[in-house]
Image (cartoon, rainbow, N blue to C red; front, top):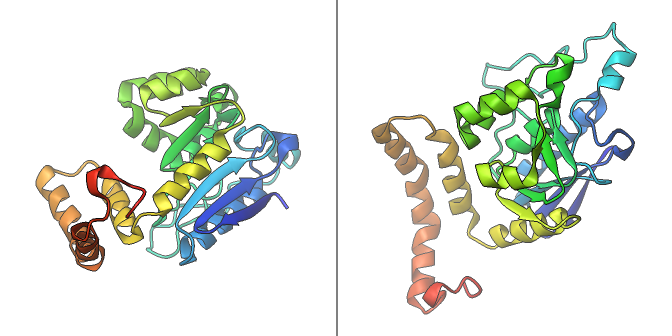
Length: 265
């Protein structure tokens, strides 16, 4: 089985395990990743997911050896983008077209390149080992970015820097990723999964309707005029405040969390 899920309370770790291919994605594992993240999003007991590649590589992209082995078959057949409002279409790399309602944290060791970089960009937060790296390595093979790379990378690092990374296909090491906003946390080699799971558990402690509303508003308001963005934020969050915020205010009034104490909420 190329994909499995390990659960620790509300934290699910989705593990992609094709170490013999440096966790490159083939059609079978793309389907399995897509199904795993749909299951995470649908389970009311799950709050935060960690996405990790087993065996020292996050993901080396799409498995070009698998594609070339059956050159007569289009590996992307049946993956046309779904615009009719039904269940989102699976992307070539699996979950890359999904807009989940819950956060996903990438735990990156080794390469996250080509389509693997696009999967890392799909996640909400990236925890990256100091020895890990990204890059549009598919540049050299004439394989375009079709799992969100041209959409998400400029939003994280800016258009000019994104174009330089995309057009050159160069290696982007962890230090640079952290410096330019392509990774949010840089950690010691071999600790990315542990650190990502600790971060996930921290987020899972909070009232989740509020976490999800704030997260979704970041995506929904991107690029909108300020007035329109504020209207979207209010429409998304007003009911959440009534459902969770009033109860939280009562806990604060009773003495919880004073002085910025996040350990007693």
